[in-house]
Length: 169
Image (tube, rainbow, N blue to C red; front, side, top):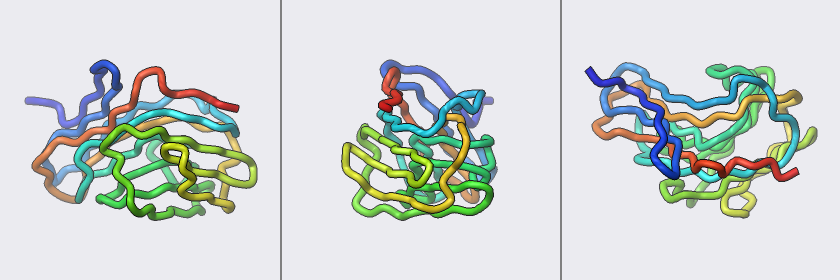
């Protein structure tokens, strides 16, 4: 029997991979274990494979408690084939849909997180700014792939480039 979710390193990427199947729910996550990342500007490189129905890709972000995104999150995601950025704190927040995106080729992701705003950039282009419900405390960094609510016939993954994560300010 093969596992449904795998984490491995294949130079130059750390990979979260979820195997085809379903309808059971499967998740593969990599995250820091302590809430050590405060306000600041952060950059990293990542890509996703095979976005589409029943697939979820988090190409990087910050969260307060893993598995509970509305408690506190800042992140880039592909949710059921839709490209979005999310900002939540204590159950209230917003998700902004993005158009004309393709994160299947490696991209440079950047978050500018300040007490009054969160800016989302891809390849140095500002895509969205959130001004409400900004997370107030340090959070974990994570990336993740998942499958839910249906059957998939193709594996999918989030690939995070080794040594790409930096705090700019």
